[in-house]
Image (tube, rainbow, N blue to C red; front, side, top):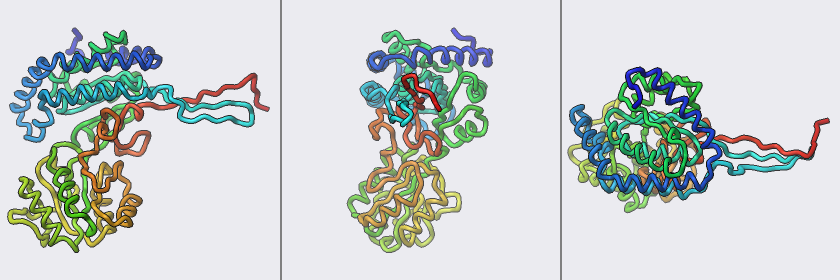
Length: 421
């Protein structure tokens, strides 16, 4: 058992072990990593009753802590969600190994052959809240990309994360890979987070996955580089050229499928010319689905809409709430979004290709969508098997961060006694 009372010593030990594991991981064959992930997936399913029992303890903790319904939904695991976790592990296992991939190759007149080759980042620290499935996603993606990972789950998901982590260790052991490749910090003590953020001798990058408070803390206090998104303030612009059925289907799904995820729509912008026709129909449908609408004054819509305040614009609700307002055209929608979004995901519903092209070319969100639910803003839905998070910065990784995005590169330069004149 690790000594969880001496946090500096605990974290230094975890860091040293992770750093040591990177040597074996950098040269681990694709077959061994595949074997570890398949064995981990099998262990998760075989031990699903243990995971659900551990999750029950976390749900009790969450209720005592007064977590919102949306946060409790994020925390909850059942057989269906465990099956999705297993599917994610298997999907990551079956992907092409990114390590060693030749990204570019060329010959120089000097006689040199130069290759740019993908290489692991090293040690990744992942700090996350409620959702215990991140334990499996992050562990799998880091292993696939040849990185050691130090996981720090939220206090709410402490027992669930521990049970899932044990399955990942089973997989590592079965494939004869270092168990230190995937480590879970075994304490709820927040001092462990502070230590992780400053472990520049051991950790190469930090990935925070959670709410604004967590990500803001990490970005302020980390001494290690950070891949992060601060909020998912997701906008949908409903153009006057929109197909009515597509609009209803997409907007309802984008808001109501799961309200507590970062791809959930938070603001609906309606072209003024259709505000009293299709716009009203969409708002009626949202209200009928139980969504609270915080509307701009004068917006046509159902009875029961609430007058929006200044705080409702540019807000991530993570609940069954949406802000709504009229705009004059696509340019007005773009201007509004640029002033209020978080560069996460924004969507246009339109049949006018010129409006779509302008929306795509002018906005600089990590993900832009056309006639598709923003709930697809997810690495699994992008074919990555899973994601470690969605990065909204512009350095290194952007959008869903999968195994490929968790690699850097090095140059391999080959000559034949070649000298420089």
